[in-house]
Image 1 (cartoon, rainbow, N blue to C red):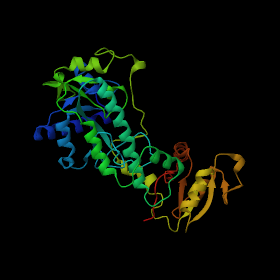
Image 2: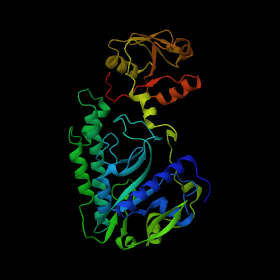
Image 3: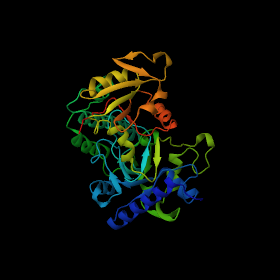
Image 4: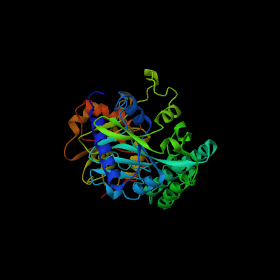
Length: 380
C-alpha cells in the first residue's frame, strides 16, 4: 500500500461517506471485484487501479436507491431514476465538484460526470442459465432507457439520422423514461428466495456470473487504505469466480485500466460540459468564427445561424483556403488569434473536434465552444 493519487483520494473520501451512511441506515454492503481483490491482497487499491466497486443485497440497494437525499452536495447519489441524461445502469455515488469524463455523448448531455464509486445490486437467480438470460434482457432495457432519454432531450427538434436510428432501433419511447427505469429495477430483481446471486446490471461476462448466496451470509472486516471495509466471508470463492488467476498477481498485459477524457479533482464537470452545452448562450451580437469546413459546418449553419453573422470558417486543408463552403469563406487557422475578441465566438463544428481543440489549446486559444450534432441546442 503506497501513497494515493488525487483520484484515489477523492474515491476514498466517497467510500468513507458511503460507509458512514450505510452504518447509520443499517444497510448491508460488501467490497466487490477489484476493491475486494485490493483489500485482500494489497490492503487498499490495486497499484494500477483507480476505481471502487461495492455491492449490496437487492433489498438494501433499493432502500438506498429510493433515498438519494441521504447524500448532500457535493455528494450526489446518481440512480437510474434521477439522472435520465446519464441513464446509469446502477447506482453511482458521485462528487459534483470534480470531473471524470471518458467521452461526450452525441445522444444525451450525459448528466452528472463527477468522480464516482460504483454501487451494484446483488440480485437473486435460480441458476447460471437464468443469470445469462436476465443479463441479456437487462442490456436491452439499458439501451431502451438511453434511447428514451435521448428522445426526451430532443423533444421538439429534428433528430439527426444517426440519433433517430439509435433511438427507434432500440425501442425508445418519448415521455416514458420514468416508467421504463422502474420496470428495469423490477426485471433485474424478478427472482426471490433463490440460492444464487448475480449482477445482471453490469457489462461483459461478469454480469452473467453467479455467486453462492452462502458466500455473502456474513462478513469480516479488512483494511482498505485507512478504512475498514466489509468483505464477504466467501471472498476467496468470489475472487476465483471473478478472476481466472484468483489472488495471483496479473501480468501487465492482463491489467485493465481506464482511458479518460477529462480528469480534474478541483473543477466541477459543469465547467467542462459548458464548452459543449453553452454554445448558443449569449450568442446574439457575436461574430461567429467556425473551425471546420465539412458537413458539420453545413449542419450548424442550417440549424443555428439565424440572426447571427458567420464571418468565416477555418480548415487545416490548405487547398480550401480562400474558397467558400456553404457560402462562408475558408481561412487558415493561423489567422484565428488576430480575429478573436470580445465580440466574436469561436465554435468547432467538426467530427474531429477533440483534435481541433488540442490544436487551439496549443495555439494558446482557450475560449472556444464545441458543436455536438445530436444535442438539442436552444438560445436562452
